Image (cartoon, rainbow, N blue to C red):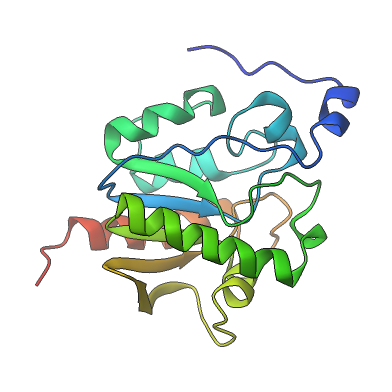
Length: 187
């Protein structure tokens, strides 16, 4: 495993508006979808790479991965049938820098990706962004009744360390509910 290289402050600032490549392929079990990449993640080229982000711990402790992945291992998710993308491609320091129009445009682009790659589940990591981008103002965390084509939707809490509403054990429980649903026999 390669350890993540810590970028300089200048590299981080230079990553504003750049992108982190999708980790995607056909017929995934779950396509995890962040709001947008942090400038830290864009600087190093890996999803959820910012120190303090709890995604990798959450995925491991919830049972999605057999060990706690380092962000440099993000592409190995494909081996387990998982992928990563974002609603909005451009990196920012904070998700609240995105406009509602960007989230709506991101929804259109995300819909095209889902149509092309056909994941079983699309898991949106952030309720507020989901409500705006998908125009579902009353949505709650968990399984959604709406679909994108044949793809089922699940909304999960944002794993950012800035999300004080959910501590790590809470994240693990909520993410684990999605994994339990994946493991259950489908009608």
